[in-house]
Image (cartoon, rainbow, N blue to C red; front, side):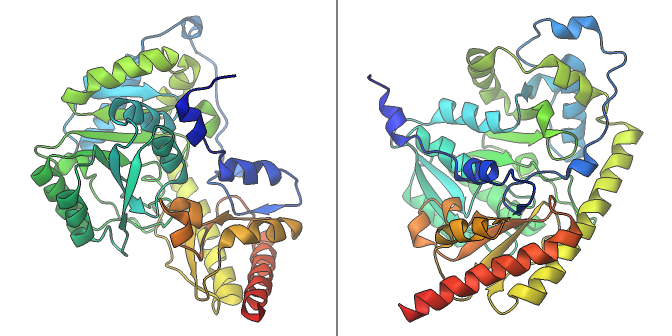
Length: 389
């Protein structure tokens, strides 16, 4: 059977494989970015028109597009509803941008580390992913300039707010510097912000897209982290020169996003009950973040370094004695603990050993201590074996 050349680059998703293996109730899973089931709001379906069961427009429901445009303008992005495309989860934005820009050998710039599924999507279509290292408040700006001077990337893909996996939130100064560079070199920005609403210290920074004066841009978000991921409702907002192309790609992919999920999103966005829900969600996750921090200090303080995330769902740990954390997955699962190795979050995994990502939203605090203790035991055993070899 003859498949396309692209299929030779198709990789299975490590995170989906780990999540599948972690379905057993006894497993304490720090692996995925799963919202806590206790915080999934109850949905009221009363009043949904029968017409929502019919085919819809590819752009999305007009009222939802207006809501999303209004929210973006409040963040500083100058846009109209005509620039909003409602998606089947924000992951679809990466698929559409990839189809728009990438052929085999196309260069794109990403953070190091960056979102694993973005790397998979870009590399599936043959992209050459060029990394720029992240610091505590954003990308190393000199490294980004050097990349832009030496290459002609199709776009720069960034996650400026509670970056996945590192948890970094770009400072205002870093955002301004990045925007200035993209304008200077005329490079498109793909800005991914699924965790923006999950802030635990009250801080907020305006998107980079709203700071651009010349460069094209795509800004994307989702309701998966604040309402229900099962709704599969995300969105992108694009500069006018890109929107028509992305719309046609959306039409070719799936005609339109499910209208039932869109209707449900419209019942929440911009309402008082949504604001109240966000407040409760932040408090709930802040408590779990603090419990994770306490467990890490107690059991991993001598093994790893990390920063306490000010938002999002993840701790990013760097081992003081590097070891390929992919080799720890089986031993951790044998101890009923799941985590995400850090290596796959880099464009060059083998050159970046010794990091791991831990989610704190999904495991109850009373089980979290035991899970971190078991993970620490696995790491100690592996490092001892490495030292003895």
